[in-house]
Length: 413
Image 1 (cartoon, helix red, strand yellow):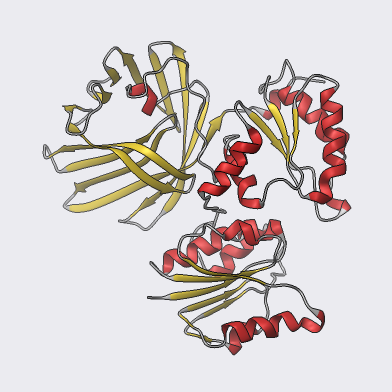
Image 2 (cartoon, helix red, strand yellow):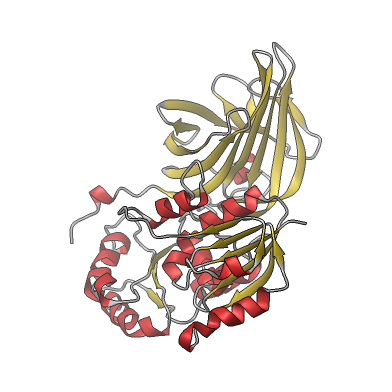
Protein backbone atom coordinates (compact mmCIF):
# COMPACT_ATOMS: atom_id res chain seq x y z
CA UNK A 1 0.00 0.00 0.00
CA UNK A 2 1.42 3.42 -0.91
CA UNK A 3 1.84 5.95 1.90
CA UNK A 4 1.92 9.74 2.08
CA UNK A 5 3.21 12.19 4.68
CA UNK A 6 1.48 15.57 4.58
CA UNK A 7 2.67 18.39 6.85
CA UNK A 8 -0.01 21.08 6.92
CA UNK A 9 -0.04 24.61 8.24
CA UNK A 10 -0.35 25.60 11.87
CA UNK A 11 -2.85 28.36 10.95
CA UNK A 12 -6.51 27.53 10.50
CA UNK A 13 -7.05 29.53 7.31
CA UNK A 14 -3.97 28.19 5.56
CA UNK A 15 -4.87 24.65 6.66
CA UNK A 16 -8.33 24.98 5.11
CA UNK A 17 -6.83 26.27 1.87
CA UNK A 18 -4.35 23.38 1.81
CA UNK A 19 -7.07 20.69 1.74
CA UNK A 20 -7.20 20.87 -2.06
CA UNK A 21 -3.47 20.12 -2.24
CA UNK A 22 -3.99 17.19 0.13
CA UNK A 23 -6.83 15.85 -2.02
CA UNK A 24 -4.63 16.16 -5.13
CA UNK A 25 -1.80 14.20 -3.48
CA UNK A 26 -4.18 11.44 -2.41
CA UNK A 27 -5.71 11.21 -5.88
CA UNK A 28 -2.25 10.86 -7.39
CA UNK A 29 -1.58 7.89 -5.08
CA UNK A 30 -4.85 5.99 -5.09
CA UNK A 31 -5.52 3.98 -1.94
CA UNK A 32 -2.59 5.51 -0.04
CA UNK A 33 -2.35 5.52 3.74
CA UNK A 34 -1.99 9.07 5.04
CA UNK A 35 0.08 10.37 7.95
CA UNK A 36 -0.85 14.00 8.52
CA UNK A 37 0.94 16.42 10.84
CA UNK A 38 -0.33 19.88 11.79
CA UNK A 39 -0.77 22.25 14.69
CA UNK A 40 -3.42 21.66 17.38
CA UNK A 41 -5.81 24.36 16.12
CA UNK A 42 -6.50 22.94 12.62
CA UNK A 43 -6.15 19.26 13.64
CA UNK A 44 -9.93 18.55 13.92
CA UNK A 45 -10.35 19.70 10.32
CA UNK A 46 -8.52 16.59 9.05
CA UNK A 47 -9.89 13.82 11.24
CA UNK A 48 -12.34 12.51 8.60
CA UNK A 49 -9.88 12.68 5.68
CA UNK A 50 -10.22 9.50 3.56
CA UNK A 51 -7.19 7.22 3.98
CA UNK A 52 -6.05 8.85 7.23
CA UNK A 53 -3.80 6.49 9.19
CA UNK A 54 -2.30 8.88 11.75
CA UNK A 55 -3.14 12.45 12.75
CA UNK A 56 -0.10 13.92 14.48
CA UNK A 57 -0.40 17.15 16.42
CA UNK A 58 2.70 19.37 16.40
CA UNK A 59 2.89 21.17 19.75
CA UNK A 60 5.29 24.08 19.44
CA UNK A 61 8.41 23.84 21.67
CA UNK A 62 11.34 26.11 22.36
CA UNK A 63 14.26 26.01 19.95
CA UNK A 64 12.21 24.24 17.27
CA UNK A 65 12.40 21.03 19.31
CA UNK A 66 8.91 20.12 18.05
CA UNK A 67 10.49 19.28 14.69
CA UNK A 68 12.99 16.94 16.37
CA UNK A 69 10.13 15.24 18.17
CA UNK A 70 8.22 14.85 14.89
CA UNK A 71 11.31 13.38 13.20
CA UNK A 72 11.70 10.83 15.99
CA UNK A 73 8.03 9.92 15.60
CA UNK A 74 8.36 9.36 11.84
CA UNK A 75 11.95 8.11 11.49
CA UNK A 76 10.97 4.46 11.06
CA UNK A 77 8.44 5.11 8.30
CA UNK A 78 8.85 4.95 4.52
CA UNK A 79 6.80 7.20 2.26
CA UNK A 80 6.03 7.24 -1.43
CA UNK A 81 5.46 10.99 -1.16
CA UNK A 82 6.29 13.51 1.57
CA UNK A 83 4.66 16.94 1.29
CA UNK A 84 5.83 19.72 3.61
CA UNK A 85 3.78 22.90 3.36
CA UNK A 86 5.68 24.42 6.29
CA UNK A 87 8.85 24.64 4.16
CA UNK A 88 11.17 22.92 6.64
CA UNK A 89 14.01 20.45 6.07
CA UNK A 90 12.43 17.56 7.96
CA UNK A 91 11.37 15.51 4.93
CA UNK A 92 15.00 15.36 3.77
CA UNK A 93 15.81 13.48 6.99
CA UNK A 94 13.01 10.96 6.32
CA UNK A 95 12.83 8.09 3.85
CA UNK A 96 10.66 9.19 0.95
CA UNK A 97 10.67 8.35 -2.75
CA UNK A 98 9.47 11.83 -3.67
CA UNK A 99 9.29 15.16 -1.82
CA UNK A 100 7.35 18.37 -2.30
CA UNK A 101 8.53 21.22 -0.06
CA UNK A 102 6.66 24.49 -0.21
CA UNK A 103 8.68 27.63 -0.83
CA UNK A 104 6.96 30.99 -0.63
CA UNK A 105 6.74 32.59 -4.06
CA UNK A 106 8.05 36.06 -4.83
CA UNK A 107 4.80 36.63 -6.75
CA UNK A 108 1.80 38.18 -5.03
CA UNK A 109 -0.95 35.61 -5.54
CA UNK A 110 -3.68 33.78 -3.69
CA UNK A 111 -2.60 31.00 -1.34
CA UNK A 112 -4.57 28.44 -3.33
CA UNK A 113 -2.77 29.48 -6.54
CA UNK A 114 0.55 29.21 -4.72
CA UNK A 115 -0.25 25.71 -3.45
CA UNK A 116 -1.44 24.65 -6.90
CA UNK A 117 1.95 25.64 -8.32
CA UNK A 118 3.77 23.88 -5.48
CA UNK A 119 1.92 20.62 -6.18
CA UNK A 120 2.39 20.94 -9.96
CA UNK A 121 -1.35 20.52 -10.53
CA UNK A 122 -2.88 21.33 -13.95
CA UNK A 123 -5.90 23.16 -12.47
CA UNK A 124 -6.67 25.20 -9.37
CA UNK A 125 -6.84 23.00 -6.26
CA UNK A 126 -10.00 24.23 -4.57
CA UNK A 127 -10.32 23.34 -0.86
CA UNK A 128 -12.11 20.08 -0.03
CA UNK A 129 -13.13 19.14 3.50
CA UNK A 130 -14.59 15.74 4.40
CA UNK A 131 -17.19 15.71 7.16
CA UNK A 132 -17.98 12.89 9.57
CA UNK A 133 -21.16 11.95 11.41
CA UNK A 134 -19.96 13.55 14.64
CA UNK A 135 -19.44 16.91 12.94
CA UNK A 136 -22.91 16.77 11.40
CA UNK A 137 -24.50 15.77 14.70
CA UNK A 138 -22.72 18.52 16.63
CA UNK A 139 -23.72 21.13 14.04
CA UNK A 140 -27.33 19.96 14.00
CA UNK A 141 -27.54 20.00 17.80
CA UNK A 142 -26.13 23.53 17.96
CA UNK A 143 -28.12 25.03 15.08
CA UNK A 144 -31.48 23.31 15.45
CA UNK A 145 -34.12 23.52 12.72
CA UNK A 146 -34.60 26.21 10.10
CA UNK A 147 -32.43 28.38 7.85
CA UNK A 148 -29.11 29.70 9.14
CA UNK A 149 -26.90 32.68 8.27
CA UNK A 150 -23.41 31.87 9.59
CA UNK A 151 -20.85 34.56 10.38
CA UNK A 152 -17.28 34.20 11.62
CA UNK A 153 -16.29 37.55 13.16
CA UNK A 154 -12.91 36.40 14.53
CA UNK A 155 -9.40 36.65 13.07
CA UNK A 156 -5.92 35.97 14.39
CA UNK A 157 -4.86 39.63 14.49
CA UNK A 158 -6.58 42.98 14.53
CA UNK A 159 -5.65 43.95 10.98
CA UNK A 160 -7.91 41.17 9.67
CA UNK A 161 -10.88 41.92 11.90
CA UNK A 162 -14.06 43.70 10.87
CA UNK A 163 -15.81 45.72 13.58
CA UNK A 164 -18.66 43.87 15.37
CA UNK A 165 -21.16 46.60 14.50
CA UNK A 166 -20.46 46.02 10.80
CA UNK A 167 -21.15 42.30 11.15
CA UNK A 168 -24.39 43.18 12.91
CA UNK A 169 -25.34 45.61 10.10
CA UNK A 170 -24.64 42.95 7.46
CA UNK A 171 -26.74 40.40 9.35
CA UNK A 172 -29.65 42.87 9.49
CA UNK A 173 -29.51 43.43 5.74
CA UNK A 174 -29.48 39.71 5.01
CA UNK A 175 -31.70 38.23 7.74
CA UNK A 176 -33.89 41.21 8.58
CA UNK A 177 -37.56 41.44 7.50
CA UNK A 178 -36.68 42.90 4.06
CA UNK A 179 -33.56 40.81 3.45
CA UNK A 180 -33.08 37.86 1.06
CA UNK A 181 -32.68 35.53 4.09
CA UNK A 182 -35.56 37.01 6.11
CA UNK A 183 -36.32 34.86 9.14
CA UNK A 184 -32.97 33.07 9.21
CA UNK A 185 -31.19 32.73 12.52
CA UNK A 186 -27.68 34.19 12.70
CA UNK A 187 -25.04 31.70 13.88
CA UNK A 188 -21.92 33.40 15.22
CA UNK A 189 -18.95 31.02 14.95
CA UNK A 190 -15.51 31.24 16.54
CA UNK A 191 -13.28 30.09 19.35
CA UNK A 192 -13.39 31.10 23.02
CA UNK A 193 -11.32 34.18 22.19
CA UNK A 194 -14.15 35.45 19.96
CA UNK A 195 -16.79 35.36 22.72
CA UNK A 196 -16.68 39.11 23.40
CA UNK A 197 -17.23 40.16 19.76
CA UNK A 198 -19.91 37.49 19.27
CA UNK A 199 -21.77 38.63 22.37
CA UNK A 200 -21.74 42.24 21.14
CA UNK A 201 -23.16 41.21 17.75
CA UNK A 202 -25.79 38.94 19.32
CA UNK A 203 -26.95 41.67 21.68
CA UNK A 204 -27.26 44.15 18.82
CA UNK A 205 -29.33 41.74 16.71
CA UNK A 206 -31.56 40.75 19.60
CA UNK A 207 -32.70 44.37 19.97
CA UNK A 208 -34.12 44.09 16.44
CA UNK A 209 -35.76 40.71 17.13
CA UNK A 210 -33.27 38.87 14.88
CA UNK A 211 -32.44 35.55 16.58
CA UNK A 212 -28.71 34.99 17.10
CA UNK A 213 -26.84 31.85 18.21
CA UNK A 214 -23.52 32.59 19.92
CA UNK A 215 -21.47 29.45 19.22
CA UNK A 216 -18.06 30.77 20.26
CA UNK A 217 -16.05 27.81 21.56
CA UNK A 218 -18.93 25.38 21.21
CA UNK A 219 -18.05 23.74 17.87
CA UNK A 220 -14.75 22.39 16.55
CA UNK A 221 -13.60 23.19 13.04
CA UNK A 222 -15.23 20.19 11.39
CA UNK A 223 -18.57 20.89 13.06
CA UNK A 224 -18.28 24.50 11.89
CA UNK A 225 -17.75 23.21 8.35
CA UNK A 226 -20.88 21.06 8.71
CA UNK A 227 -22.89 24.04 9.91
CA UNK A 228 -21.63 26.12 6.97
CA UNK A 229 -22.88 23.32 4.74
CA UNK A 230 -26.33 23.81 6.23
CA UNK A 231 -26.16 27.35 4.85
CA UNK A 232 -25.63 25.99 1.31
CA UNK A 233 -21.90 26.81 1.31
CA UNK A 234 -19.18 24.89 -0.61
CA UNK A 235 -17.73 21.74 0.87
CA UNK A 236 -20.95 20.51 2.67
CA UNK A 237 -23.97 18.24 2.16
CA UNK A 238 -26.83 20.56 2.94
CA UNK A 239 -30.35 19.78 1.74
CA UNK A 240 -32.19 22.53 -0.08
CA UNK A 241 -35.45 23.44 1.63
CA UNK A 242 -38.11 21.08 0.35
CA UNK A 243 -41.71 22.13 -0.35
CA UNK A 244 -44.18 20.95 2.26
CA UNK A 245 -46.27 17.78 1.91
CA UNK A 246 -43.91 15.96 -0.47
CA UNK A 247 -44.29 12.17 -0.48
CA UNK A 248 -40.95 10.68 0.69
CA UNK A 249 -40.91 8.33 -2.32
CA UNK A 250 -42.09 10.84 -4.91
CA UNK A 251 -39.83 11.98 -7.80
CA UNK A 252 -39.99 15.53 -6.41
CA UNK A 253 -38.33 14.33 -3.19
CA UNK A 254 -35.25 13.20 -5.14
CA UNK A 255 -35.28 16.20 -7.49
CA UNK A 256 -36.77 19.15 -5.53
CA UNK A 257 -36.29 21.82 -8.27
CA UNK A 258 -36.61 24.71 -5.81
CA UNK A 259 -36.73 28.13 -7.48
CA UNK A 260 -33.44 30.09 -7.52
CA UNK A 261 -31.33 27.18 -6.31
CA UNK A 262 -27.79 27.14 -7.70
CA UNK A 263 -25.66 23.99 -8.06
CA UNK A 264 -21.92 23.78 -8.75
CA UNK A 265 -20.42 20.53 -10.10
CA UNK A 266 -16.80 19.48 -10.49
CA UNK A 267 -16.38 17.95 -13.95
CA UNK A 268 -13.75 15.70 -15.48
CA UNK A 269 -13.13 14.01 -18.83
CA UNK A 270 -11.25 10.73 -19.12
CA UNK A 271 -10.56 11.38 -22.80
CA UNK A 272 -8.80 14.74 -22.37
CA UNK A 273 -7.93 14.73 -18.67
CA UNK A 274 -9.51 18.16 -18.39
CA UNK A 275 -11.33 19.27 -15.24
CA UNK A 276 -13.67 22.17 -14.66
CA UNK A 277 -16.71 23.53 -12.85
CA UNK A 278 -20.27 23.37 -14.20
CA UNK A 279 -22.85 25.80 -12.84
CA UNK A 280 -26.56 24.97 -12.96
CA UNK A 281 -29.50 27.03 -11.71
CA UNK A 282 -33.22 26.33 -11.29
CA UNK A 283 -36.09 28.67 -12.19
CA UNK A 284 -39.79 27.94 -11.67
CA UNK A 285 -41.81 30.24 -13.97
CA UNK A 286 -44.96 28.37 -12.90
CA UNK A 287 -45.87 25.42 -10.68
CA UNK A 288 -45.80 22.71 -13.36
CA UNK A 289 -42.64 23.89 -15.14
CA UNK A 290 -38.97 24.02 -14.18
CA UNK A 291 -36.23 25.61 -16.25
CA UNK A 292 -32.68 24.34 -15.76
CA UNK A 293 -30.07 26.82 -16.94
CA UNK A 294 -26.57 25.53 -17.76
CA UNK A 295 -24.51 28.34 -19.23
CA UNK A 296 -26.57 29.82 -22.06
CA UNK A 297 -28.60 26.62 -22.52
CA UNK A 298 -32.01 26.12 -20.91
CA UNK A 299 -33.57 22.69 -20.42
CA UNK A 300 -37.28 22.60 -19.57
CA UNK A 301 -38.87 19.98 -17.35
CA UNK A 302 -42.60 19.33 -16.87
CA UNK A 303 -43.77 18.31 -13.40
CA UNK A 304 -46.64 15.93 -14.09
CA UNK A 305 -48.72 13.59 -11.95
CA UNK A 306 -46.46 10.55 -12.43
CA UNK A 307 -43.05 12.18 -12.45
CA UNK A 308 -40.66 14.73 -13.92
CA UNK A 309 -40.63 14.72 -17.70
CA UNK A 310 -38.38 16.32 -20.31
CA UNK A 311 -40.27 18.89 -22.39
CA UNK A 312 -38.72 17.25 -25.47
CA UNK A 313 -40.04 13.81 -24.47
CA UNK A 314 -39.16 11.03 -22.03
CA UNK A 315 -38.92 11.06 -18.24
CA UNK A 316 -36.07 12.07 -15.97
CA UNK A 317 -37.80 10.37 -13.02
CA UNK A 318 -41.08 8.45 -13.15
CA UNK A 319 -43.20 6.86 -10.44
CA UNK A 320 -43.35 4.30 -9.02
CA UNK A 321 -39.80 4.64 -7.70
CA UNK A 322 -38.84 1.02 -7.15
CA UNK A 323 -35.73 -1.01 -7.89
CA UNK A 324 -36.12 -2.58 -11.34
CA UNK A 325 -38.69 -0.07 -12.59
CA UNK A 326 -38.18 0.91 -16.25
CA UNK A 327 -39.43 3.81 -18.33
CA UNK A 328 -38.64 5.81 -21.46
CA UNK A 329 -35.99 8.44 -20.94
CA UNK A 330 -34.65 11.28 -23.06
CA UNK A 331 -32.56 9.07 -25.35
CA UNK A 332 -33.06 5.47 -24.21
CA UNK A 333 -34.57 3.16 -21.61
CA UNK A 334 -34.13 4.13 -17.96
CA UNK A 335 -34.03 1.62 -15.12
CA UNK A 336 -33.81 2.29 -11.38
CA UNK A 337 -30.88 0.29 -9.98
CA UNK A 338 -31.00 1.20 -6.27
CA UNK A 339 -32.84 3.35 -3.74
CA UNK A 340 -30.20 3.11 -1.03
CA UNK A 341 -26.91 4.28 -2.48
CA UNK A 342 -24.38 6.08 -0.27
CA UNK A 343 -22.07 8.53 -2.06
CA UNK A 344 -19.13 10.74 -1.13
CA UNK A 345 -18.63 13.80 -3.35
CA UNK A 346 -16.90 17.18 -2.87
CA UNK A 347 -20.12 18.53 -1.31
CA UNK A 348 -20.07 15.82 1.36
CA UNK A 349 -21.58 12.41 2.07
CA UNK A 350 -25.17 11.57 1.10
CA UNK A 351 -27.27 8.56 2.13
CA UNK A 352 -30.41 6.89 0.80
CA UNK A 353 -29.84 8.01 -2.78
CA UNK A 354 -31.64 6.78 -5.90
CA UNK A 355 -29.58 5.69 -8.92
CA UNK A 356 -30.82 5.42 -12.51
CA UNK A 357 -29.09 4.08 -15.61
CA UNK A 358 -30.26 5.17 -19.06
CA UNK A 359 -28.95 3.23 -22.08
CA UNK A 360 -29.30 2.97 -25.83
CA UNK A 361 -27.39 1.30 -28.66
CA UNK A 362 -28.95 3.37 -31.46
CA UNK A 363 -27.46 5.11 -33.36
CA UNK A 364 -24.41 4.51 -31.12
CA UNK A 365 -23.81 3.08 -27.67
CA UNK A 366 -24.64 5.62 -24.98
CA UNK A 367 -25.12 5.33 -21.23
CA UNK A 368 -25.88 7.83 -18.44
CA UNK A 369 -25.74 7.00 -14.72
CA UNK A 370 -27.42 9.56 -12.47
CA UNK A 371 -27.53 9.64 -8.67
CA UNK A 372 -30.40 11.61 -7.08
CA UNK A 373 -30.22 12.26 -3.33
CA UNK A 374 -33.22 13.10 -1.12
CA UNK A 375 -33.99 16.82 -0.71
CA UNK A 376 -30.97 17.74 -2.83
CA UNK A 377 -31.26 16.55 -6.44
CA UNK A 378 -28.59 15.34 -8.85
CA UNK A 379 -25.34 14.64 -7.00
CA UNK A 380 -23.48 12.51 -9.57
CA UNK A 381 -23.80 12.23 -13.35
CA UNK A 382 -21.61 9.92 -15.44
CA UNK A 383 -22.05 9.99 -19.24
CA UNK A 384 -20.42 7.27 -21.34
CA UNK A 385 -20.53 6.73 -25.06
CA UNK A 386 -18.79 6.11 -28.35
CA UNK A 387 -18.04 9.06 -30.61
CA UNK A 388 -16.06 8.80 -33.86
CA UNK A 389 -14.99 5.32 -32.82
CA UNK A 390 -13.64 6.44 -29.42
CA UNK A 391 -15.11 5.58 -26.04
CA UNK A 392 -15.45 8.59 -23.73
CA UNK A 393 -16.45 9.06 -20.09
CA UNK A 394 -17.52 12.45 -18.66
CA UNK A 395 -18.21 12.91 -14.94
CA UNK A 396 -19.85 15.58 -12.81
CA UNK A 397 -19.95 15.54 -8.99
CA UNK A 398 -21.76 17.99 -6.75
CA UNK A 399 -19.45 20.56 -5.20
CA UNK A 400 -21.97 22.90 -3.55
CA UNK A 401 -25.58 24.03 -3.72
CA UNK A 402 -27.84 26.59 -2.14
CA UNK A 403 -30.12 29.58 -2.74
CA UNK A 404 -29.03 32.30 -5.13
CA UNK A 405 -28.03 35.56 -3.43
CA UNK A 406 -27.41 38.70 -5.45
CA UNK A 407 -25.10 40.79 -3.27
CA UNK A 408 -25.52 43.78 -5.58
CA UNK A 409 -29.21 44.04 -4.71
CA UNK A 410 -29.20 43.78 -0.95
CA UNK A 411 -31.72 46.15 0.65
CA UNK A 412 -30.36 49.36 2.13
CA UNK A 413 -30.23 49.78 5.89
